[in-house]
Image (cartoon, rainbow, N blue to C red; front, side, top):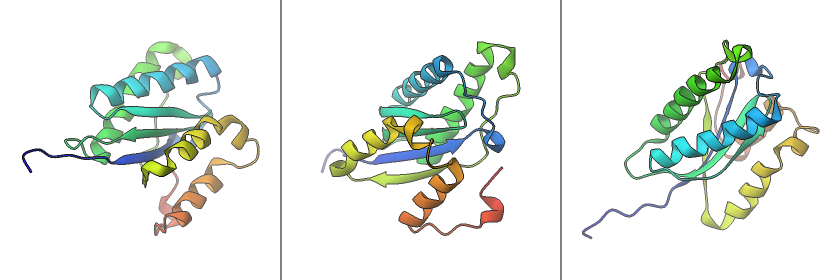
Length: 151
């Protein structure tokens, strides 16, 4: 084969440092979602959707053959953290958590994942972030140590 062809969809999840509700302004959160999608596009990892709540973000994107998941997430977190600090003094202490989770998504499941990510506001009226992340880790059979899961 003379070319490299890849279709690698990933669902990324990470929170603000200590899960602080720093994204409580819905207008800033909408801007953050759009900005993260721009960052992904610049890295040739087009995002299908970005959404979250006041303390975390979900991204669904197509991972480029030339970018690792860890490098994509590192850059999205780095650039978006710099960007949000330009939105006002209330964001001067804004930081993302050190870690992240991401999971592969089958093309046949994209619509369900898009719906799930788009429904974050209603979802988190019922389920908190910690329980949500634990459920994903168990669903995908990811071994984790609760002592190192949160920062």
